[in-house]
Length: 176
Image (tube, rainbow, N blue to C red; front, side):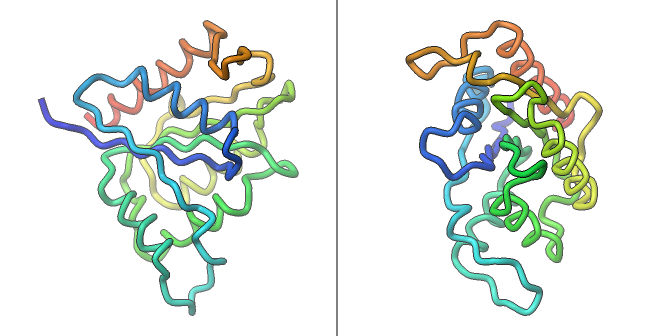
């Protein structure tokens, strides 16, 4: 069986981010032949401008995407949208097409009842513009995330865990 590389990208820079926790939890649902790597370094990517040269952060980001067979992005919602650092990083892939035809899963999580639905809609719009491969089942909004995590920083809510596994299964199906 072929080894598959999955890249996890958290839209939050916080060390104790629930979005990063979601990605780490999700990784446990992947089969043994899957290599899961979390991208670290969104904060090292400069503001996007077509005239700027790539720096090490941009090169590292693009390389991680190119080496991945699939990408899972989990983001919080800031002011009804995707955090600027995440959108900025994705903007750096426009000219290279690194995400074109790349299977992607998009997840938003929020302490609010809305589950970050506006950030998720914005992220999906960007991912569509970038030419990613995703289906209607390739996205998940997780409302009230703080109520689904125990004191040990583990997701304990069974429906949420089931939904995360479904995201993994769907992404692997798209990868083929």
